[in-house]
Length: 204
Image 1 (cartoon, rainbow, N blue to C red):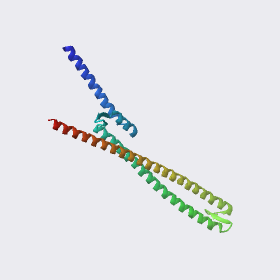
Image 2 (image 1 turned 90 degrees about the vertical axis):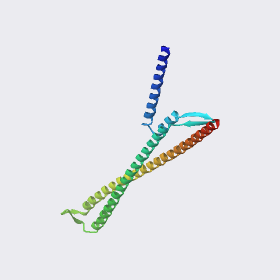
Image 3 (image 1 turned 120 degrees about the vertical axis):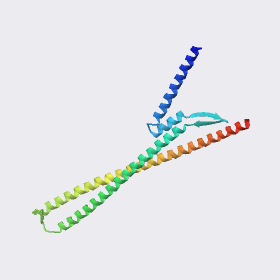
Image 4 (image 1 turned 180 degrees about the vertical axis):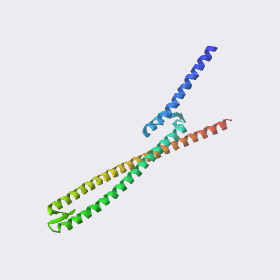
């Protein structure tokens, strides 16, 4: 009799440790990884049973709540990144407008200078028209390069923004699809539970 009790106690401890390790594995699996891997984990850990010739999947409510929170966190992160990108684009657009204004002013000054005498005053020193033009065109070239650099950064930021919007739309679509399926499963389980309650009441 004591041997039987010892064996039963050992089996109970072993089963308890296995359940505890499985719970810990589930929680840890929903704490890290991509949304896709978390869904994969949820599918693997969901239970299933057949009733009335149909197969049903059962998912723990706490796991659904956890993956919903993870999806919302991901959405908030993507939205924050999109806001930062939009702010960067706005700053760069302002810089480009400023550079365009400076470039236009420089071009106007160049037109005025070319219409003057061959000998011109530059910072109080008399220089030839060729030297003067060379200096101005160097400045204009530098400004143009600066403008092209900001245009490149603006377009690159625009591409990143579009990619972020696409990713956000994909995540939202994925979340809506998952929410719809979860709601359908929950409704099916509720209907089945009500059917079982009705059968139980009729049996009494």
